[in-house]
Length: 147
Image 1 (cartoon, rainbow, N blue to C red):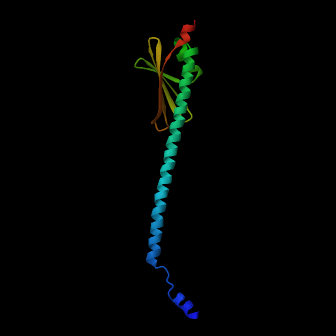
Image 2 (tube, rainbow, N blue to C red; image 1 turned 90 degrees about the horizontal axis):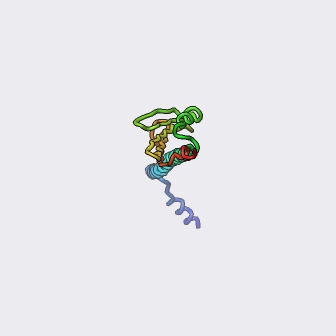
Image 3 (cartoon, one colour; image 1 turned 180 degrees about the horizontal axis):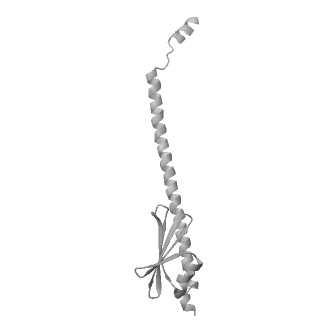
């Protein structure tokens, strides 16, 4: 029995420094791969969240302007939007352009009247000036018809 125990301990070998270093390098390569995936996923989530938020803001503005089309007369909309709602106003290329900042986004609303219909274009820009969302619709500005 003693011979078996001695031969067992004599044949026991440890790891060399090269084997330890090689295993550490392999583990580091695997960790770097997974970390890069996690970082990319975090960036993608942040970008997606920004787009969803901006799209929600654009949709909210579109609903707001649809409501204006039913309640505010065309001749009075500049005054209402500027004085009451706080939009800045410009008249560019025969189009009404309204701007406002909400929730760290700049919202640009362009109204273009064509006969009985009004083309509404809403663009949402982030703080760097990059367009994040856009929404467009054509509505009948019917507040004038109710008289």
